[in-house]
Structures are given as structure tokens and as C-alpha cells.
Length: 243
Image (tube, rainbow, N blue to C red; front, side):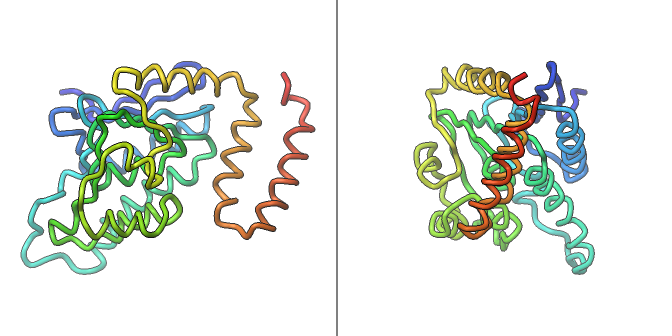
């Protein structure tokens, strides 16, 4: 039986690939917990992380999406514990000290869509599709919504969450879900070009840009300016920046 998630490393570039293409790369909560650890481990020894899905789709979310909950339902503490699996996964994306590049070739649904949003850079093919179908399944999707608060404009996020409508890659670019949209047959080449550029950057600069992006967008303008001033002086005076 194939591993549900594959981790490969070439020098200091780590690729984490969801590997259940026959079910759209849906994963169990136990596997998502393992993915969290994979990101935590990769961030310690990598320049960047590439996150992708095998087959036609990026990720259709959790195994449990669309499955009727048990009756009687679990108590709140049990629900909260289960939810922590996903919040911890989100934290791995937000807290990684290295940039994460998401590669979306097909559908990104529910949790899959949230993870596409959480990547620092998301390259999508023109065949990619994005949706949050939770309200159509009578699920109140604040877990998914919480992934978007620092990634998408409010009106774009609320439209996607309330409507459960699927959007195409170009609208995802407009909404802030994607960073760039390329023809499907150019997706891998576009990602490779970006990775090659980032491999040539000094590692200190790669890490500093992620450090700044992680904090600055939640700061006041003055705070972000002061942080930029200090980080710029620290990194650009570092002896290894031009090595």
C-alpha cells in the first residue's frame, strides 16, 4: 500500500506531496497530524518547502467531509480535540521559518482550499478550482474561515464561505487565494523557475523575508516600517549575505 504522503529532499529543498490521487488526496485526521510534523521537521533543515498533490487534484480535504456525524454527536471537548488537529496544521504553515510554495493543478476543496491559501506562494494552473463546500453540508466552517483571515480580503472570503460556490483559478488570483496562474502544461516549469531563483538567493535573505511576511501584515504601518528598517540593517550587514 502506497504511503498517503511522500516527503522527498533534494539538497535543501523539501517536497511534501499528498499521495492519494484515487480519492483526490483526502487524508484522515491521523495523517493530517503526521503532515503537521512533516512540515515542522522540514522547516528545520530546508531553504523552502514545496507542497503539492499527486494526480488530477491538489486536495479535496478531510476524509470525513460530507460524512454524516455520529448520533448522538460527541461532546464539545471531543470536538475541540479533533479540531486541534487542523489548527495545529495551520500553525505549521504559519510558523514555518521557511517559505512554502503550494502547487495547485486541479481542485482544492475545503481543507485543501484552506491549505492552498496558507502557502506563502501559491502557483495555480488555469485548470485549478477552489471551493469551501462546508455550508452545503450543513457544517459551520469557522475552522476553514480562520485560515483566510490573514490571507484574503474580507468580502472575498465571506463570499466563498457563505456561498459554497466553486471559483476558477483567475478569480482565485483576484481573491488572493493564488499568487500566479499559468497554463496547465507550464505549471511544473513555472514552479521550477521560481525554485531555481530562490536557490540562488542567500539563505539569510530567504529566511528574513519569511520572518517579515509572517509578522508585518498584522502590524501597524509604523510597526512594519520599523521592523523592516531593523531587519534590513541586520541581514544586509551579515557577512554571509553575499557568500
